[in-house]
Image 1 (cartoon, rainbow, N blue to C red):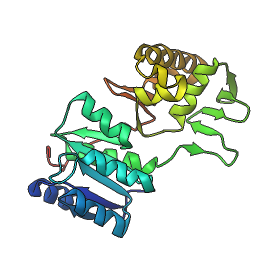
Image 2 (image 1 turned 90 degrees about the horizontal axis):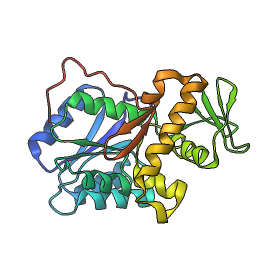
Image 3 (image 1 turned 90 degrees about the vertical axis):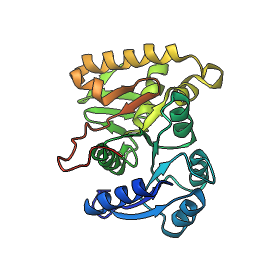
Length: 245
């Protein structure tokens, strides 16, 4: 999906911020609905099923995390959290509930638009007709359980392979450490964060040696204190963008 004409739902209880977001995004070519509460947000979402939801967590009638959970019961609609809650636990709670990305207030509205474009471009992984997952020159074949870089095979241990598979299946999304640990090592290791540091390092090293090069640090990027983001583009901020929201 391209950004042009995408339908956004802005959920923000502070009217000045909500109006600013709507006005700016409308000028950039988006169709925008707005809601000031969780109840209004769910009505608007049910009525129009927007392409993406921009969600403040601090709503007057219900915590925004619960709104994420309700949407996730029925749909995979992308959700970007916008919140003044900057604590790690709040970010993790939103992402674990199903949000695709998180921006702490105050933020550059240009960065917000770049995040919107990134999520809309990557609503799902790059999957070929044969079911293979692709990221640049990296290709993972889930049937043969093999990985190649530019057509050349690269050996990974079973754990390394599973970790890479989960990451490639979530391209463009911010994936928490806890989610990765549960997916690869199981619930009993959900707190063993040191595993990820070691294994992600191994993935980067092997892919770099296979020809990906220094770009691997951007392809599998660390979000400090939260998790990892795969193939998230480095956005440029429009020169005419207001400073912050």
